[in-house]
Image (cartoon, rainbow, N blue to C red; front, top):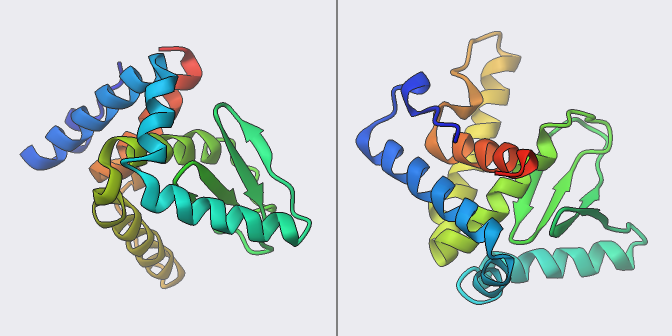
Length: 166
């Protein structure tokens, strides 16, 4: 199993949350029925938002693309990466970085694990952090590595581990 806690020297809380979410996600990946059950009950807040957005996008004739157990949509003209909305995620059409899909897929497992806490522990802080780093980069300032914070490192590692079949 990947464990980038040592690489990034996380706090005790960061190490705990990273380990907890990665181990729980790998368990859920082996028991996909439980992933779906949790995503559609415990994680219903973000999953419902994702399905509403998906419905609107389908009505706009933007069709989903299957990725493992979930679907995603490609939209946008500016490179911005992706956003996970429960069991659905969205990514930029111009961005061809293949690490986005596994990373956003990892966030869908975090949603199933953290449920109603996901927006507050992962989604909102992740969005703020992403745009903060974009602003710093545009000003020519250096940023810490994207995965140094537990929720981003956990999402990346969950997606990569699942792709490797662990």
